[in-house]
Image 1 (spheres, rainbow, N blue to C red):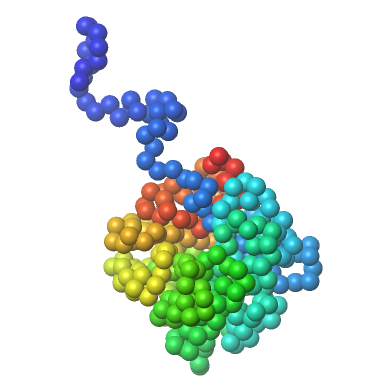
Image 2: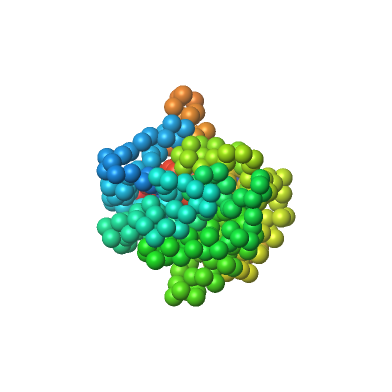
Length: 333
Ligand code: PBG
C-alpha cells in the first residue's frame, strides 16, 4: 500500500505505529481490558471483641487484619468503587490440632460472611476453604506424626465449606490441595441443598515461596515441615493439566492457578485445554515485591501493578484474585 499524493516516496513495510498514534485508536484496538468485575479482593478478618481492630500487615503495605466492623467499613469503600467480589480469610482466637474453628457455625469467617451479605447483598462473597489458619500446627490437614493425612481431612474440609454455605457465602474456594476434596465438598453441598453454589478450586497451586507475606497476614505458617507433599512442584507444567482435569471431573466450576505472574504458561495451558473459566491468584509475595520497589521509588507502583494484571488476563485468566483490587478500581473506571 502506498500513501496518497504523487511525490511521496514511502517504503513499503509494516507500519505498526499507525494504530498507536492516538489514545483513542490505541483503545479501539486493545485486545485485553481489565474490568472492575475481573478483580477479587482478599480480606483478612480477625476474631476480636475490639471493634476498632485494624492492624497493618507489615509485609503487605495497604493490607490489614480487620475486625468485622472494620471489614464492613472497608467493604463500603470498595463496593462504592465498584468492587464485585471478595475472598475471606479468617484468623481465629483459638487454634487446635483439628482446626475446629474452620467449621464452627459461629466461626470468624462464618460471622463475617453473614455481616457482609447483610450489608452488601450485591457483593459476591467467596470463602477460602482450608484448615491451615485454624490448626495449631499450621498445616492444611490433620497431622499424624509429621504427616498430613489426606482422607480423614476431607470430611473436615467439607464441613468447613458447608458451614460457609449456611452462613450465606456465594462461592467456596478450597485451597488445601488434598486429593479428592472437590468431590467430597461437592457431594456434601449437593446433599445439603446447595447444588447451586459454585465452587472455585485452587486446582493448580504450587509450593511457592511467594506465599511468605500471607503467612504473616493469616498467621498460618506451618510449625514444622512444609507444604511440598500436597502443593505442586514449580518445575511442573504438564502435571497442572492432570490436577485441573481431576478437579473439573470432581465438580469444580472455576479453575484457579496460583501464584499468577511466574506461572503465566500454566494459566494459558488451562485456558486452552478446558472450557471452564480460569482464575489466577496474584499472591502476597507478588504484591509485596511491587509495593517494596514502589516504596523505594524504583518503579511506578500502580502502573507496574496494572501491567502485571493485564499480563495475567492476557495469559487467559478471566478472574484475578489480587491485593491490588481496591487500590486499582478507581483507575479502571
Ligand atoms: C491456604 C492459603 C494460602 C494462600 C491462600 N490460601 C497459604 C498457603 O498455601 O501456604 C496464599 C495466598 C497468598 O500468598 O497471597 N489457606
